[in-house]
Image (cartoon, rainbow, N blue to C red; front, side, top):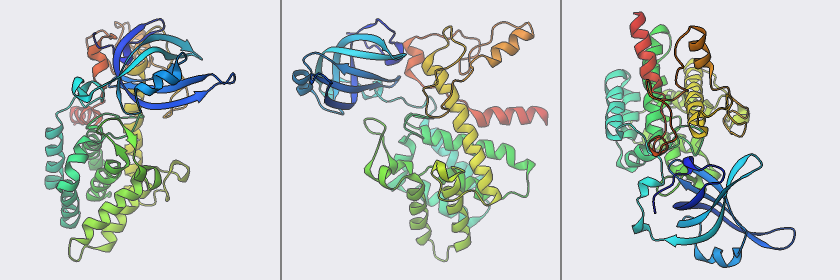
Length: 368
C-alpha cells in the first residue's frame, strides 16, 4: 500500500491509505439510519469523510485521534471533495511515520531559532526589553514548544515550526522597514512581533494534530502571551512598568479591531506597525497556501470557501502581467521559479513559504 496524500485526491479516486482521524461523530439521518461524520488529515491537508453503510459497526473500530487505514472512494458533494469510506481499521502508532501527518517548515528550525536569538542580542538596544524577551525565548519551559508550534490551525503558517518562521520573517521585515521611520521604537516593535502570537504554544496542541486546547478555547493566545510577559517581568528586579505596558498593549491590540478578537485597538505607533506587518505577512502566506492547496488547474479563481479571506481570489495577476509584456507564462503564486507546478507528492509534502522579509530586504538593498 503506497501513501496517497489528501492533496492528490480527485473526484473518482479510489483510496486505500492511512490518515489521522481528527473528528468523529456517530449521527442519525432523517430516516433514522446511522452514519459517521469524520474528518481525516495528513500533512498535505484534510478531507470531509463519511461512513454510510455499517456505520455503527465500523465506528467501533476506531476513535478520534487514531491513525486509521481506510478504503473508499472520493466523490464531489456540494462542490467539495468528500471521501466515502467502505472499510476502516485502527493503525498502531508504531506502524506510521508521524511526519506523514503533520506539515513541517521547509526551513531549518534550530537555525531559525538561533537567528531570532541573534536579532535580539544584536538589534535590541534597550537592556530591559532585551533581557525580558531573551529570558522568555531561552526559558526551557517555552523554547521547545515555541520552535514546534504552528502559527495558526489552518489560515497561515499552519505547520510545525510555523510560529517561529512567521515571527522570524516579521522581525526581518521590520528591520528592513524601520530605517525609513526613525521615530519608531525598534525594540518595542521587535518585542511585540516576537510576543504577539507567543501564547499559541499553549493555545494549540501540536504533537498529533493542530487542535485547540481547553485553555486555547477558554482564554486564547493574546491573554496567554500577556501572562507569560507578566511572569517573566516579575522575575527581573525593578522592571519598568511602562515598558511592560507598551509590550502588553502591542500584544493585546495586534488583531487591530475588537470584532477580530483584540480587547483594545492599536493606540501607539509601534502597535500600529506590528498590527499591519502581521496582517500583511499572514495574508500573503494565507494566499500562497490557498493557491497551493487548490492547485493551479484551469481555474483562474480560488474557491470562496476559505476562512481567511471569505471570498474568491484571482490567482493569475502575475501571469497576466507577464503575458502583457510578451514574456513566457510565469508560475502561479508560490510555485518554484523556473519549474512547472505539479500535483506530485513532493509538492504535497511541504507547505509553501513567502520568505517575505528576505525578499523585501533584497529589494531595498538593490535600491540602495
